[in-house]
Length: 503
Image (cartoon, rainbow, N blue to C red):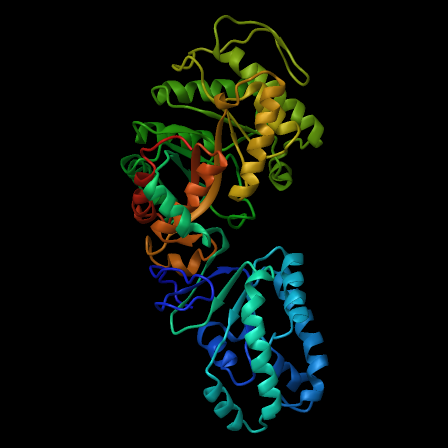
């Protein structure tokens, strides 16, 4: 499989100019064609052997050999089991069988739907004369009458397969097969929309991993260089994770993880324009009033560029290692609500008392005050009831997770919560955090970051879809290698969203 994704996508079963056949990963690819059409040859050309589940090969497992047609039913049963298990694990899978019966194709679509992955058909329509010649050359040829019957079935299939419910139907050609991360599969059309009718979007850089060459000795120089490059290319904010050990979804527990507040203070001195904050501060890690003091200090030292991210905390292992209490989720939400009410008091005029659900402050004392009249508060998490209700009542921004369709649904729920408390939904900034890497932007990006690597055009399309879902700022967890390569390679994506009408 090539990762050169500059070629256009193939559009359905219509003939025309040879183009790349674009497939999402993961997905289920169902090959459709008669015996001898070249399905196995085509599959082996483009896919790893382990991804191909072949009726012929499974006949050799459950029968005498791959030509033992009496073992076909058992081979198909085993094939379905293997396909289901692979899809459950999120593995791209190619079914190499004739798949000429509608009921068989429907079964494959059900397997894909159960696993939540797209199902695509690829029709192998080899000329009849070539097909029959290949069959005659086989050690055990498929009878001519069977081939004739299959050719009739194929003709009927081509008339109806586009209406059967596949996510896409392609015709195999001499063009390349291009496998792209599922998140980038539908992006070409969205990228064209952004080019023809641009919409604006801000971008933030999330730095969540610090395993860079040179170790701790080079960390200051590399971090400041990356931060300055981020400002130069147009990132509006720079954020770090508020964790004291690396989280499992990103790396290993023993990786370097600088403390967030000290790191943000360093970034305040290394930058001049980007907003700075933690995405997000775990509500159990610090006394709430102390957190107010930390953020106020960051705002002063950065010249008024701080924002305050808040979250209910989730990483139990971290609490265990550092001796922090990890109360039940209901208690953590009470802490979060207290913070949303107390922090503005700590940063505002006077020194009012505060009596909350979990904390009592006799006088909200915080000097120096932040330079900003109002430090923005962002709440992370996508809980549709409690979290988004708190956002609607108290926060300036939220961070919603998931693909564009999921984010769009949550934005709708957030807007309902806003209307319930008579708040204009437009006053809440919606952000989204996702991983990204630009193909060729750093050495080995295509191999190491396969699930999020894409071309500039693919990422433009991806973020256009987020803008249409209601996202105002995309926070990008670029896969940094200690250099500015990925940051600089992302510049054209930012440039594509600098201007335009609101979505």
